[in-house]
Image (cartoon, rainbow, N blue to C red; front, side):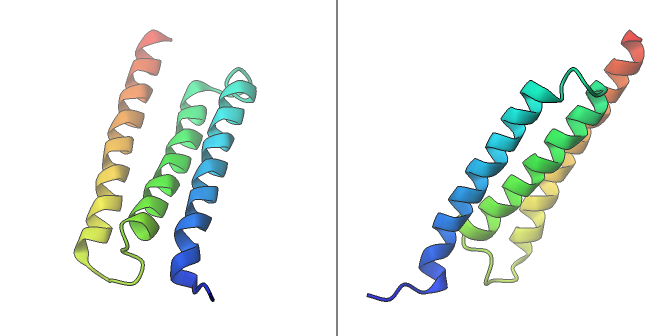
Amino acid sequence: MKLGSAEIRPSRALVQLLALTACVSAAAGYLQGAMPKLAFAVVVAVIAVSKVRLVVLDFMGERQDRSPIRRALIAWAAAVLAIALIRAAIVGMAVT
């Protein structure tokens, strides 16, 4: 049985998602004290948007289709993370 790229892609995406999760965990343990909280939040947000993009493209099957829902889902996740980052920045400025 020959596997095409469509069958392999979700497995590859799962490995990439696990690797991104490991990066966040390593960053949380190693970089959190070494860098400002806002910079750390930005790093985590970029990794989170990357994970959302992988889920939308591979697990929801939107890689082949050019549907508007693909852009909308990724934009929605980016907007929610931007709101969280702005809130973190405001709270960080108010505390210091």
